Length: 412
Image 1: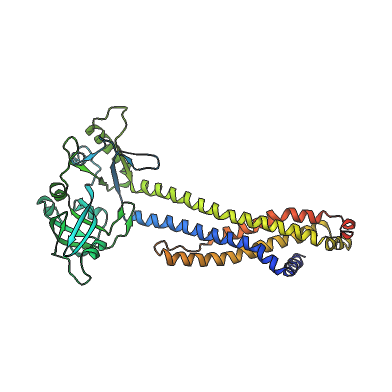
Image 2: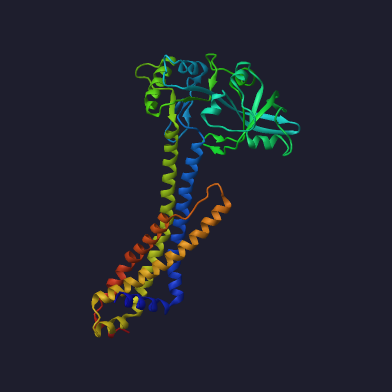
């Protein structure tokens, strides 16, 4: 009986191929949009997670100011993380759970070599930065504690910066570049890192922290202290992370003379906190994209209801005849529901194929995202398309099944 109902439904739809195709179009576009946009949203989430993995493990990030809701740290005249703060946190008597304290100064500089000139992000930091954040040498070496102590004018380049300043066949190791007019000797190039939440890691120059604050950036806070962009604190025991955060908080509040009920003028975040914040944003984005795409499915469902109502009117005599020869109300109801579901399901299957093509196009345009068709998105789209067919087909089906056979046969 069920197979017979499917056969009758297909035959009825085949009798009006163009109308059926146009009706399916709304569902097809809706399913294709859902698959494409949800896959892109999931790919963005994976991409963000991959970028955060480049930040290193077991590291706390200390920023000046307090993070506003949905905004950057609130920088005020008194919101600074200073060199003195770094020294205080590095004291094992005050912060015993800190394994390494890594000051970082970030500025944009003008770098020149030969006839090439580029604006590059400069990072003044310590050798521990390379270890904590798992940098790997591509050529040459990283600077050392001796370079730091001697305030050596040495530089380590990222791959993008290397390509901007040197010819492809030119060996950068030992060459001299000028940073804001000051000569620096290139001692190393690190392996590509890609983009992170803190910017393009490959378009950067690393120099010893002491050299940066004594030679390149001599500006100070109103109190004459060296202001840091970020302070990194590495820890060995993940179970002690909360204790470490409390130790750092106590030290910074004491160093900044914050009273008992005073608000902190700094923000401490772990890599997990940063990732969770960004993933929360991308999750909302994915839901938003899916909701927008679902509107097309609803519009397609309305189209199905409209066509099925027209079909009921056109086939009134057929319904009356079927009932006159013994068809029950549930038989007519099932047939019209089946036609609506078939329309919706066929449109959904075509939409899956169209969505796969859309993902291939996105792959070509934005290869870094690498979106893929997932089983979840296919199952969701298929289920939703069937549900749309049932929901929007039920009223026309009930209307058809409720027709009186006598009135239906007399219908002109």
